[in-house]
Image (cartoon, rainbow, N blue to C red; front, side, top):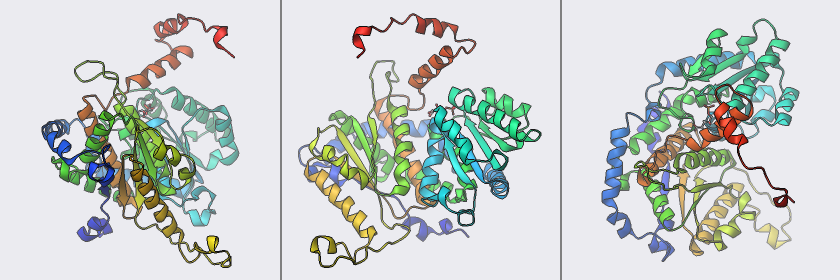
Length: 474
Ligand code: PA5
C-alpha cells in the first residue's frame, strides 16, 4: 500500500488556502467584505454550474484518473532511459517546458545536476525552452549525445522553436551516432495533428501522446510532464494521486468548500478593485518555478480581448513571479508602499524536508548572536510571517497557500488547484481560458518571416507595415 492510500496521511497533506488578509475585517477599507461575496452567490453558482457542464470538455481534469496504461508505459520507458543514459534533454517551450521544470525543481534534489552520478541516481535533466543560439551551442559542451536521450515535446507539432531544436538534434544524432540515432529521440505530441507525429512515425520513434482537449499549459500531468519526472525518479503515481485528491475537493460547487473557486473569486474581486497584478511568492526554492508555471497558466488563459459573447473586454491580470525571502530585498518595498494594484499570494511550506541549524560563532556580538540557536527553517518561516504582516499592515491584499510539506502528493494538489482556479476565473471573467489567439498570431508571423509555405499572405501583411522612423531611434 502506498502512503497516499491512507486517508489519515492524505488529509494531513492537504494543501490549505488562508484568505483572511483579503478581507476587510483584517485589511480595512481596501479589503473584501464577506457580504460582498455573499451578494455574488448567484454569479458563483452559475459559474460553478457551467464548470460542471463543461467538465467533459476539460479533458485535463481526467488526467489524474484515466492514465493507468500510459503511466505503465512511461515508467517502463523512464526505467530504460535511467539504465542507459547520462542526460535527458527536453526540447519544448511554454506548456511543454514550464511544467517539467517546475515539478523537477520541486521534487528533485535542489542541486540535482551537480550531484555525483551515484548520488543522483538518474540522468541529468536539461529543459531547453529557448532558441538562443549561445544556449543551444552550449548544450553540446555538457552532454555526450551517445549517452543522451532527447524528448521533443510539442502538442501542435509545428512550433518553430521546438521544431528547429528537433532539426538541430536530429542532425547531431545522425552525425555522432549514425545508425540507431532514432533510439535517442522520444516524441510527445498529438496523436494525429502536426508534423512531429509524421516524423515520429517515419522514424519509428518511441512516442507519447498529448490527449485531445489537453492544452499546453494544462498538460503537465500527461506524458508532457510525467516522463521527465519519472526519468528523474519522481513518484508520478503519487503526483497524480495528489491531483486526484484536489480535484475531488474542488468538485464542490459551493465557493466556501472549494479552494480553487474561492481563489478565483477573490482574484476577480481584486481585479474589479484595480488589482491588475497577481504576485505569486513561494517561500521555498523548491517551489520557485511553480511561479513560472503559474505565470503562464494565468497570463495565457485569462489575457483575452474578447468575451464569450464577442464583446471586447481586454481581460486578464498580469502575473509576477517572486521568491521569498530573496525578493524581500528587491520587490517587497513596492508591495508594501507601491500602488494598490496587486494581490500577493504567498506560497508557504509547513515542514521543509530538512532542518539546518544556525550555529553559534559570534556570541559576543548580540546583533548577530540572536540568530544562533535558531534554524534556517525558523528564519524563513519568521520572514514569511513578517512579510505577510508588513503587506497586510500596508493595506495590500494578500493570501497564503500552504503545503504541509513539498512532496509529489502536495505538488500534484497544487497543480490541480491552480488549473481549476484558472478555469473558474475564466468563467467569472466570461472568457475562453483555453485558447491563445495572441500567441498564435506571433507564431504565424514567425513562420511568415522565415518563409514557411502557406504564410505568404502574412508575409505581405508584415512587409506592408510602415517603415520605422529614424527620428524615434536614439
Ligand atoms: O499553453 C499553450 O498552449 C502554449 O503555451 C503552448 O504550450 C506553447 O505555445 C507550445 O506549443 P506546442 O506544445 O504546440 O509546441
